[in-house]
Amino acid sequence: MRTTLFSVLIGFIFILQLSSCEKNSQDTVTKYYDKGEFNGSVLIIKNGKTVCDTALGLSNIEKKIKLEKMTPIYIASLSKPFTAVSIMLLQQKGLLNYDDKASKYISLPAYAQNVSIRQLLTHTSGIKDYESIISEKGLTNQQVLHWLAGLNKLQFPSGSQFEYSNSGFIILSLIIEKISKQSYGSFLNEHIFVPLKMKNTWVYDSSTASKNRATGYDKEKQPDDYSILTTGDGGIYSTPEDLYRFDRALRSFKLINKSNTNLMYTPTKLSDGKFSSYGFGWFIEESKGGKSVSHTGGLSGFRAIFWRDLNRNSCIIALTNQGDAFPLADFLKDIKTTLE
Image (cartoon, rainbow, N blue to C red; front, side, top):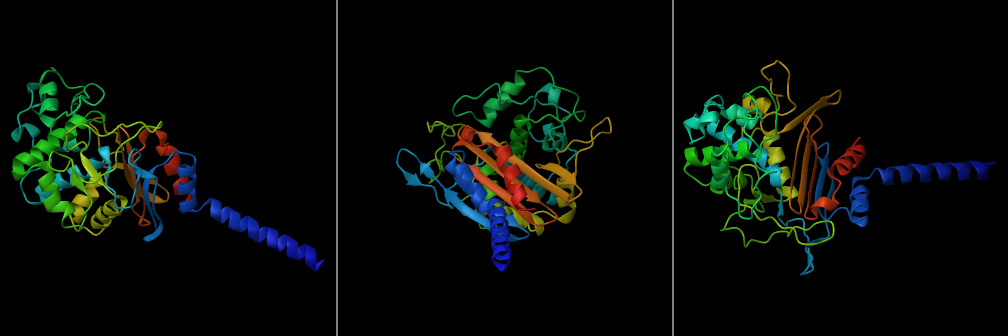
């Protein structure tokens, strides 16, 4: 009888251990790597404690260079929260107001004269997104602005709808440059990257192009590297550790004050009274468990996810340089399960 009970107990303990193993964040990340679906770096924080901090695979396949935790990876649209914070920093200095017309600062087409900075931040401006239409190598902000000048109307009345617009965030980048009299990269470096000791984060341009960084690939491991020069909508290379520094700075109001922080995480009210699920540079999700915010990024051979649970001080950061091999939504869902 004792032998039987002992065997049952051992079996029960084994099942518990197996269940724990299956829900372990590190094991989940490793499974994606083993299936060939993830090549990159990950940092996962649960209730303020690190539960996974790893880098897997290669930074450069042809040269067989190992990808390290400190290897900068292109974060694409995950740059948008940095653009939003930069605008908020200018607002805190009294250099702009959110309801100012963007045309107060830079030249815009006649149809966009009344678009506000707030509408650009919240993707409610109605300005057409360029990304699915023009994608030439070396594309610049000025070329996008020239393309916008060739259009004759907004997609919809400003403030009436949410429609994601990379073009809008390029305009925000130009406003940052106009007001600060600095390049977008210099402004972020001086006001965000250096103060937060984000030593492996920078904006891609001719002066940083030769820096150590991950090369982008597709799921067949063929080169698919970053090749445009727009800023505001993208342009940043970073690491999970540096992004976590940004997370902590936002939680502690080191960069922006409490009022702006609340505004950043507030869903946008549309002209019909309904709300979008986007604030200033973040997608917002509210549930019984509290509020979480997130942003993803994807271009060429790169994908990025930054998910932040605001109530539990938990976050998931994953950057990959083998873009279309990575099932981002499935990965995020599986990792969230390990944090429950």
